[in-house]
Amino acid sequence: MTENEQIFHDFTIDPYLFYEAIENSTDDYIYIVDMIRDISLISQNMLHDFDLPGRKVHGLVPLWGELVHEKDRQRYFDSIEKMLSGETDEHNVEYQIRNRKNEYMWVVCRGLLKRDSNGNPVFFAGVVTNLGSKGKMDYITGLFAQKECEKLITRLIESESNPGGILLLGLDDFSRINALNDHIFGNTVLRQFAQTILQFLPPNADLFRFDGDEFAIVYKNASGQELYGLYQKIHAYANRRQITDGISYFCTVSGGITMIGDDGDNYLDLIKFAASALEASKQNGKNTCTFFSPGLIKSKLRTMEITNQLQLSIMNHMEHFHMVYQPLISNDTLEVGGAEALLRWTSEVYGPVSPIEFIPVLESSGLIVPVGKWVLEQAVKTCRKWISFAPDFVMNINISYLQMLDASFLQYIRDLLAKYQLDPRHIVLELTESYFVTDMEALKNTFSQLRKEQIKIAMDDFGTGYSSLGMLAQSPADIVKIDRIFISAINREVFNYSFINAVIQLCHSVDIKVCVEGVEYPEELETIRSIHPDSIQGFYFSKPISATEFQSKYWGNR
Image 1 (cartoon, rainbow, N blue to C red):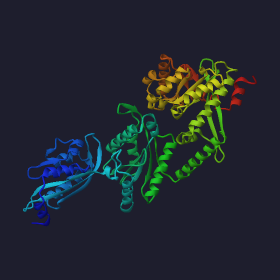
Image 2 (image 1 turned 90 degrees about the vertical axis):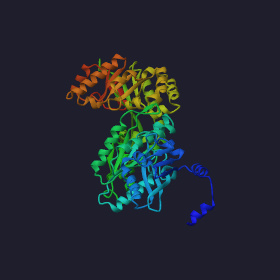
Image 3 (image 1 turned 30 degrees about the vertical axis):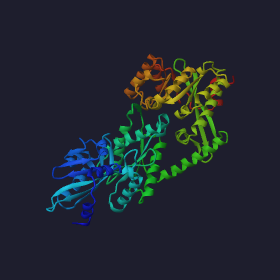
Image 4 (image 1 turned 180 degrees about the horizontal axis):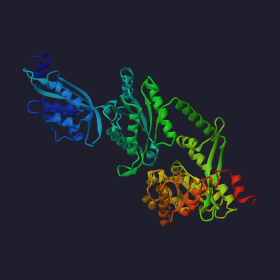
């Protein structure tokens, strides 16, 4: 008799009480297998969390194997086979397994096989540990955390001749999802995204959770083309309406790609380079993917400098900001009926900076709210002056969804209109098309309040985002602005002409006015006028110009 056998021979306890004490003292899943009868006893939490028939299970090993992710299933069964063949008595494997929520979680399964005197298996017992509870995993998504990503990339750098690359993913405007709902809902969105992306991965790719809304895919032995192809699959999924907990939303994804070995030979550089590529995607309009290049580091430094300069400009009472105005022309009379107020900014270092570059910086830094208030006041003040020349003049003002989320937004507009004694019918607030779909539920109350104030709302850039013709009838927009992308080929592409014509007819049937943007050439104007939009905007009439130039051009010295 061994020493352990002697101890337990002298120490008699109730086996049921012993098992109950063990089960209630750990969060691990416990299993005991009678190998002769092939009957297993599993802990209550194991039955609760996984799709198993009961606490007593016939044929647990193959049933459990069916729940293991197909990428890991062979490794699981190989470990079992090694025990049954007598090669080892220990089972110690990490793998992903599907729980009752149909989500995959990473676990480590450890067990020990006991044999009789003839070497035949008689008893197998062990525990399954959720790695998310051990700090190795991200508990929100069930993915390996960043530290595990570092270990894998380091191994690839050291051992692989063709180590592959990294695809760093970032959910676009994810902070908006949290702001419009709450962090619990946001965590659910992250988990759903992670669990879905796992299904897109090839066998030689692994997904990791990084900080906030970022994920990293390490794709072993892959070319840049294969990495980009994987992003395209994810992009297609992310560009559909999603539903979580009964709430519908859109959440597109941007990507940054860096190649292990070619772009860097250590983890820190590679992640920094992937982050630079991802940031470039965000700066280039989001919902796209960028390959790393050395020039991106220079671009990132430029963005940081621009951010600092914007902050200084705001602190110095909006120094270096100015407004320009582009006319809105009546289709019937070809006379000016309004204008779109546009913000411009000049850097002391870089000179004039495009709004395409500096507006996203204002939004990402939160500076868009104070700047937006300044823009509103400049536009309202100018409009008040110009209605003395044109009594029905209307000023269109671009608004960020972040401004609409600001609690003081509605009252600020009321106060401005009162301060300058301007009737609400003279202003239109423009919001990019995508937000009419992605944030409709959250912004519905704001839209309703604006309508009560008799302030009109325009849907800008129609046709470039998520909208469909069918949703226009339910839209709170009073005006739809069709994007230049459809105008540029209106006389070459039958679809473009048909699309604009259909939008105009449908909008008019539900009392929505239409403005066509981006008209630059006489032949474009002629075609557009024939399908009767309400107003036209574009370089054919005028580029955006200063208030002084605008007044002189349309009303002379009056």
